[in-house]
Each structure stands twice: as C-alpha cells, then as structure tokens.
Image (tube, rainbow, N blue to C red; front, side):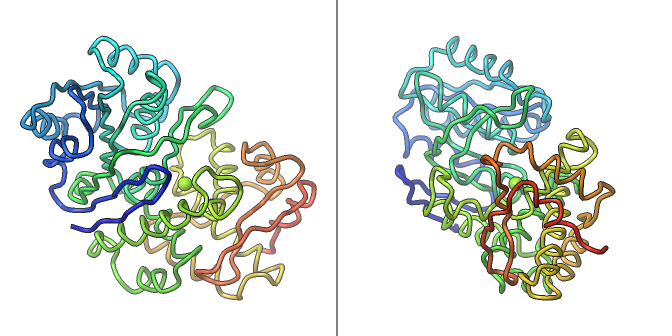
Length: 352
Ligand code: MG
C-alpha cells in the first residue's frame, strides 16, 4: 500500500493499491458514521465495478444504492446533478451519510459537487478509475459541473474523506483514455520533477504505474497544500499547457480531441514560445514533444496563432486584461508570467 497524505483544512489520505475496490466498505466504516451510502457511477463503469463496491459496502453493514448516469462529458450538466439529488432524497440520505464517486473525472466532479451542495455538504469518497482521474482530477478537492456557457462554471471546493486508487482498473481503460491521462503525467514532470521526466523518457510508465501515480499525486498534493483554494499562487502551475489546451478544446467544440491531447499540444507550443523568447532552455520543447509522441499524444494543431489567442482570451481563468501562461525555465522548473491580452498572440507565435 502506498499512501499520500493530503494536509488540507480537512486532511485525508490517497491510498494506492491493487484490489482496493474491494475495501471501499472498510474505508467507509473507518472514516464516516454513515448509515446509508449512494454509489454514483456511469454507464461505462457500472457494469465493470459497481457490484464489487456494493458488495464491500453491504458486507460492512451499510445500506447502499447506486445512481448511474449516462457516461460522457455531455452528461456534465445541472440536470444530471438534479437527478443525483433526487436519488439522495428518495433514499433518505442525511447529513451523516456518504456518497462514493466511482469513475473518471466527470463522475468525480459531479458526484463531488452533488455531495458538496446536498444538505449544504455531506461526505464523499473518491474511487477514480481512469488514469486522468487517478493522477489529477480526484486530488485537490475541486468539484463542479458545466453550464451551456462554459466548462466547470459552477462548483465548489470539497475535499473527499479518502481517495482509493486501484491501478487494476486501468486494465479496462481504452488506449484513448490512457493517452489522455499521460498528458497530465508528463505535465507533472515538466513543472516540478526533472528526474521523473527523465524516468518517463527512459522507462515505460505502464510497467511502473504505481510509482507513476504516487509521484504525480504527491506533486499535485504539494502544490495544492500551498494553495488549497486556488487564490492565484502555486496551484496555477498545474495549468501548464492548459491555456492553449483549453483554447484548442474550445476551437474543436470539445469533440474529436481529449483534454489530455489538447494539453499535450499546449505544453509543446508554450515551451516553443518560451524558447523563442529566451525564457526556456533550448531543446526543452523537443524533449516534451518526443515524450508526448512516445505516449501516443499529438504535438501540433492546425489552428493559427490568432485563432488560439482569441480562444484563450475567453477562458474563465483569464482574469481581466492579462493572460498568465505557465512557462518553463527548464524541465522541472516552472513559473507564471503575466502577458497583456493584446500581446498574447505575438507571445505564442513561433517560426514553425
Ligand atoms: Mg487538466
């Protein structure tokens, strides 16, 4: 068992172990005084794992039921949250009861938000089953839901009572989603850990997946500890590749490209921009591109610099007249720079 302790206002542990799904009931027993548990999951994950969790919960004496929503980012809207509230209320959930989120990032974000807001906040436990959720979205306490106007516009910071990571769930994850998660893995090396980046260059992440998850979660924990509610400090470094990544997702209308694929392109472009301005050590963009290719991620896009700059301008993280892209001095050493919005296009423009 590997444990990463998160010392946020309300501390909790992230435990990583094969077969951990079968211990969900024991965790719930130890960490909560719930009588009832609603397991929230989606139509892809439910057939694979819901019985094991339910069995574990009922073996530990909980009254448990499942709320299943249709898998996919299209479900990430307030209507799905309202359906979760209905299940909670019909099942008689009280403030001491518990929600378990079993699935990828969409599931964790929405079940977490439903738990954060139902009865002004009840406990929830994260059981992430995708690589992206295991290394990124299940850590840090961000929960939320999309509006027609944009992604994650409604949400809350709500820390789970525990995060249970069972790497065996990755065996059933399609390659497309493995690559999606690997972009965030590469990102952690870029922003904070040069030796981890080198390890990814020379080794095979899949063979050492427990190490990979533990390192990524630890980096994210360290960053989140310094800036729990994203007041503009350290946590912004997690957005490396995301300013342009979000722009690409937006220009593609969130279809045909995963979040990770867009972030991979964003990381390479921002490293190139940094090199062109003499900020980033020469050769950095080439190393990031090679590593992304190794893990089946794209490194370039068809959109013009003007189109990308325009799309970045309307990002919700753009506060006022400036954009604050994350840049690298070298692999493992990141910082943010304030760029006036009207200069952003020329800032990202490079020769190739
Ligand atoms: Mg991301």
